[in-house]
Length: 491
Ligand SMILES: Cc1cc2nc3c(=O)[nH]c(=O)nc-3n(C[C@H](O)[C@H](O)[C@H](O)COP(=O)(O)OP(=O)(O)OC[C@H]3O[C@@H](n4cnc5c(N)ncnc54)[C@H](O)[C@@H]3O)c2cc1C
Ligand code: FES
Ligand code: FES
Image (cartoon, rainbow, N blue to C red; front, side):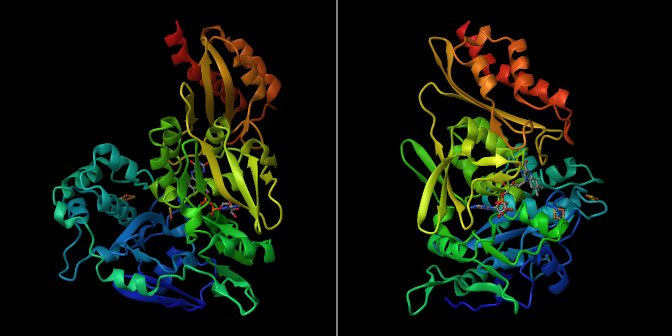
C-alpha cells in the first residue's frame, strides 16, 4: 500500500490514473470527459436527475478478491472522492476483440436507442444491475432504470433488451481481474498519520497553495480532530446535495472532508432493541437493513431519488441538509429516532425531534457532526405506516410525506407519533393531530377533527410542489388511511 498526496489515484480499466493539479470540486464527469476524453459519459442535467452520466464506481471487496460496484451519477460526485477506488465507463465495456457487453448487443438488436444521448447511462445502470442480479424480474429492471430518462425511445425495448441479455449469464460479469491488484496498490491508509508529538495529521488528497484542501480520513478520530481544528469544513457524505451546490451555485468550500472512507461510519451496528446507523451508510444499504422491520419506510426509500442517488446518499446527509421536504425525516420522527452528535471526543444524544431550530437550522455546534442515527426496532403490536406523495412516482421530491407509529391498546390508538414533511419549515411531528388520534378507537376518528387540528397547527402556504389546500387534504387523508386498516380489524 502506498499513498501520495496532492494526487487523486484511481483505477480505470487495468491502469492507475493519477490526477494532479485538479480542483477539490472538479467533478468525476468533468475529469472523465475533459482530461480522459471518455466522452461516452454524457452531461444532461448536471444535477443527478437524468442519468446520462451514470458510471460504475468500484471498491475492493472485504475479502480483497474482487470489486463491489455501485452505479453513481458522475456529474455530482467530486473527483477526489474517487481516490483509492475504480471506475468503469461505457468505454470500459468493449472487449479487446471489439465485442460488446450483452446489454449493449441487445440494445442494438431490440432498437433500444434512437438519438443515443441517454444510452451510455442506461447501459451502465443495467450493467451495474446484472453484476449482482443475473435474473432480474421486470420490477428490478424498471427500478434500476428509474434514474435514467429517455425522451425518444420509450422503455419497452430497453427492458426487453435487458431480459434478453440476461440469457447470456456467463457474459454478464465484467472482467475486472486486472483492477484488483491495482486497487490493493492504491488502497488508502486505514490508520491516521501521527506527528512525533502524537498528534493526528490528516493527509490531504488535494491541497492548494492557499491551504485549501480536500481530505479523506480513514478513522472517526481523524474526522473529529480535523473538525475541531477546522470547524468550517464542509462535510461530504454521498455528495447528492453538495454536488448540486458545486454545479448550480458554484460553491467552492475551502475545506472539504469526505466521510466515505471512514469504516466506523459505514457500519450498521445492532442490539436486540436498536440499529445504530453510521453517518456514511448509504440509503441502498439501509433499504436492506430495514426491509423486514419497516416495509413502508423501505418503500419511501425506494422512491427516494434513484439507485445512483441512493448508492451514495446518506441518512445523515438528508438530516443535516434539513430540507423541509426531506423524505427520511418523517419516518425517523415517527419512530422516535435519535442522533449521536460528536465534537472532538465528546458525544451527546439528541432526539431528531429536537434537532431542528428553524428552516435549515439545527443544534449542531461548531466542529460538531452527526456520527450516527439510532433507530428503534419494532416492538410487538407496533404499527408503522408511511407514504410519500409526489408528482412522479420515482426520482421526485415530496409534495408531502407522512409517517405514523402507534399501538392499539384495547382497540384504542396509543403512543401515537405522526410526522410530516412539506407542511412546516422543517420536517416535524404534529402534536395536535396526534392528540386527536391518541386514545380513540380508529373508527371514532373524525376527519373534521383532523382538519381543525391541521388548520390550528400549520401556516397555510402554497409551495412549488403543491398548493396548501392540496397538502392539507393529503395530510388529513394519509392520517385516516394509516389507521383505516386497523378500523377494519377492530370492527
Ligand atoms: C436527483 C436527486 C434526487 C433526490 N431525491 C430526493 C428524495 O426523493 N428525497 C429526499 O429527501 N432527498 C432527495 N434528494 C436530496 C439528497 O439526495 C438527500 O438529501 C441525501 O440524503 C443527502 O445525503 P448525502 O449523503 O448525499 O449528503 P451530502 O450532499 O454529502 O451532504 C448534504 C449536507 O449534509 C452535511 N453532512 C453530511 N454528512 C454529515 C454529517 N455526518 N454530519 C453533519 N453534516 C453532514 C453536508 O455538509 C451537507 O451540508 C435528491 C437529490 C438529487 C440530486
Ligand atoms: S448529467 Fe443528468 S444525472 Fe448527471
Ligand atoms: S435515445 Fe434519445 S434520449 Fe434516449
